[in-house]
Length: 252
Image 1 (tube, one colour):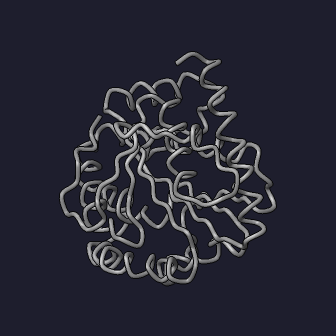
Image 2 (tube, rainbow, N blue to C red):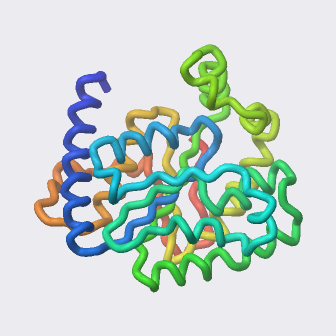
């Protein structure tokens, strides 16, 4: 895909996103998109592509940092509830409550009891949100080990992206297998009919961004939808029945 091809396709999809926003503001829809994934999988760039031309009054990106001492003692979901979408709002979580099933689990930032409690309650929590009117979409961006290594190296060399490097990022390659196991367990146990997961293969950033946006737009209703622009490559965005316990291989 050339740069011009990518920009043309992205422009068409961003026009569709603006149509969507006009509709959800008028109709009062509450849209919540969760983006999870390995370090350097492309979450930031994907979110930027989605929100670039949307109204900041009705569109918010939530990327919470380390919990405060007070938040550590609260109900785990409490600090996320404050950022849920109201009527006519579109919210994107750049990482979410699934930190507990990924980073916190692998890095030992939570106890086994805390992890087990999260895994046994998160589906019910999400079902309450959905049945209360929230449109919830969950995407996991996955990349190969070699591609992640290259992207992390590129970050270190680029003075404009060095701010993204953290001690946790530096453990991503060393703990690759542990993260794979945590990912598989998370997908298996938290993929349910009210809030199924979609896995996006992200070794090619451009293809991943375009297809994720197409997939999201294809699941939402708004007038004058350009269906020709929304054909999703099923080898990039992976869906499977919410009732199934057998997950397709998510490794690129």
